[in-house]
Length: 309
Image (tube, rainbow, N blue to C red; front, side):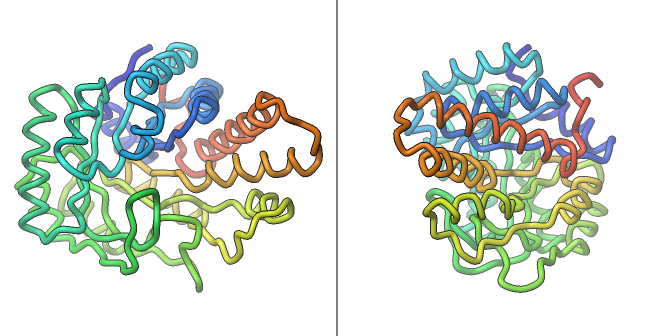
């Protein structure tokens, strides 16, 4: 199996009424967990890294690790740059073998976002790489991406943006947010915005960022073993599944994996304070992350069996 573009994945997902999971990877155990879940569920997945994770892991190590995971899983995967901040970082990812990149100009004014995105599209398309862009602003914090405010995507602007930039997919803002603290009140997503954009851009793949469910089980596990993660609340599974049945073809998940891994490791340290073999606590965390990803594939994304289609 190989690292591939997301183009065919998204086309099948759009037509099939499901979404592909984009899981942020930060170490070998998370890569293995996602790959093993993909194999178990015969599902396409996207392995993605932020620019800080790319620096942390190193392009050479990352590419080799992902290729090995892809081969072991026997499933085609995409390697994606998440929230690329500028052309230089995007170029590094493409030159390192990424099959998909995101340029995030959402913090800029509309015209600047169009110009920056178009520049990236020209560079990427010339090298056979697809481009995700973003329009609208998500509140919250994830790595180097943060905003205290939320700006919903305007549907007519979304249509103009896609037409002028030539991007291959578009991340929109309909109420999701980065991090573990997404809602203080009742969770709500603006499906009217999603449906209008879908009508204006038929067949075009939409992306949801900040879409972790913030599983209460792993939040509780972390807190019961020394963490201080109070008030964490994510996107309900039924809202995400509805989005996946519409124009959303890619759903990003990062916080859920972090909470699962951290909660598991904290529990091992609490239950077995004499343990100092990294394989014991990282191995158990890897197993739980795999289980979590399989649940996302089945109950949120609906992508099980997609690698066989």
